Length: 342
Image (cartoon, rainbow, N blue to C red):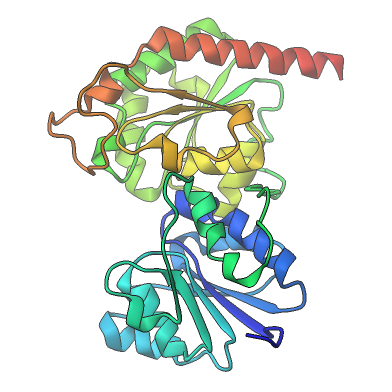
């Protein structure tokens, strides 16, 4: 493509963690094509996060329940006119089909899942790279030089939900997940929380999660000895508001989930409890404020299964609470010391 593209359409990932990891791509896209109109297609439930990304002129919210099957994808895609470049960040066949139906002049994505015929640029996915870097690799055909360093950062909106508790250290606990193999067993979660509350007597715990995770957080609260020291925000925030909540806290303890990635993107120290998944590919991108925990010596780890063959994930149930809490105390101590100097 010799002429500068006027309109670029990006199909963003469907999971919150992947959407956060795509921020490096979106920032770099603006650097390469500063004058193009960039529009994004996003899963409706997490699309508001893109409102925090500079340079996106329009966000098109897609719901599979509203646009069912091939006919639904065609009906959704036919609204787009005169698209110069379509980027398919997900590897799914349906995301490539969506680009094909837009009639974009150039359709870029990784060759997987029988997508080659639907893409004009079917690229080989690079090996042994972080997922954020994989997404950015889709831009390589458009530049002559290496793409260089990337930033997976967000500036969140001001928080209002935690403003009533300004004097207490706030620790986010995000121990649930939509993937059963990433859920911290309830008793282990209670053990971590009780130990934290004992070691940091003035701390408040903030529970986060999607509406589907309310049952877990309600059971959690019913077992906790000091529920008055907990703020339960599970199912009560949009993704955009959650970014603001995380930025207003001093520490996030989370499973390997969208919340961990979002905390990392807004610059909050984050302790990540790794269950299923491979952190070499999908850990929060900026390592300087991220600390990971994984049970050593398990033959099954890391795995990428959504369910655990043991029922309760051993990789989470057998984590050393003392190590997690000690690291949390160290981070909070540095945070409070920094505040006092200010």
